[in-house]
Image (cartoon, rainbow, N blue to C red; front, side, top):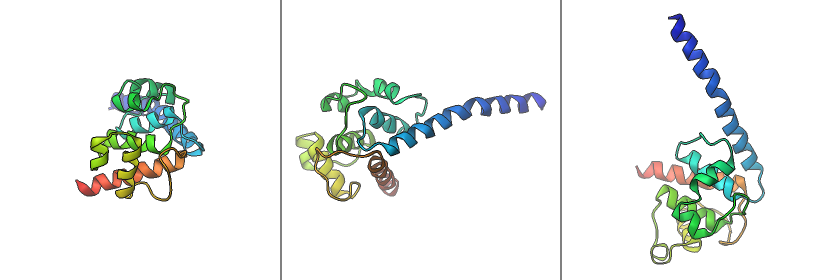
Length: 151
């Protein structure tokens, strides 16, 4: 019994820095005025349930080769992501419903229109307008609640 308790204590002690690091990164993302590609990649990996990446650059490196990132031309982790690009990444990653325009011409413009129609993106915003970290998390929150309602 003492051995099990000791192993449990060691396991919890080792895992605590991982969760606190994730929270620190999320706090930094919330403070960003303009979302970076690395931050968007980190949010999308956490969205999938993988919080093992220690930094935004690591998460970006893991997702850089995916089709959605290549299509948008996001080559560096510090590149700014605009609202249309973020909408496109969220739509692809969560496999959200796509409208006719998005099916015929996949890209940021029609992805943003689809997410506005689904009321995941609220307020004004053109596809090339900057997106803050706070707004990005709100979009993800609405997308997740929409998916939960549909399932």
